Length: 294
Image (tube, rainbow, N blue to C red; front, side, top):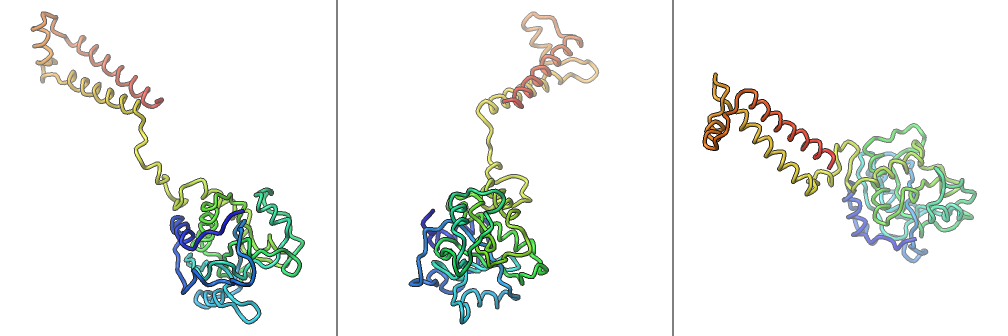
């Protein structure tokens, strides 16, 4: 149960989710005010339009027709993936539906799909007050394809609404899951759609499936302990390079020789030099292992 989003908050949620939005006319104030309640809202409903052609479809869902005045949804998701916002507030999209389904959506408590509805438009409870509605441009004959851009937008829209309210993917259902006299959307399964919405919700808004990393993981997340080990590793490598710098043909390091003479120590021979290098390499290897485990 939730207070409906404001138009501004919806717009931000959609754009944050990576949705391409088209604002149609006075969509912010275009609704069925005076013809029933709007809110509290419990979920988001997916439909198909049984139409062809984006311009005609936008006009139809915005204005409605003689038997059913518009708006007929809040947004229309076109074949190209753009979402045309046509109304905000109460709209004529859900109609009557099964109260058991409503209870399950409110509780987000069902398996892969809600209980099949046994009530419909004529004898069900008012869904226009309880659900956001999204019409999707498609003939609804089971043959008209769903382009990848359109399906991706459907997923993003549902995720945007669910994310804004703190809902899970189980708050997104199809019209056929709400009303016993509806078959939409046809051409993809709602359990699969919910699985894709759920996947999106595990990532930051705006994530795309082909992203190699989430935006938040691109930041430097090295711990202080790792930074200290990295500095120690760099110092050990520098020491290794210094000890490895021998004079050509003599296998001698002039600086080390001079330091040894000044201190009255034995001048390192080749065997001693190898021992020095091995000690430094051991220290570098230990630092690398510690860095990986830190």
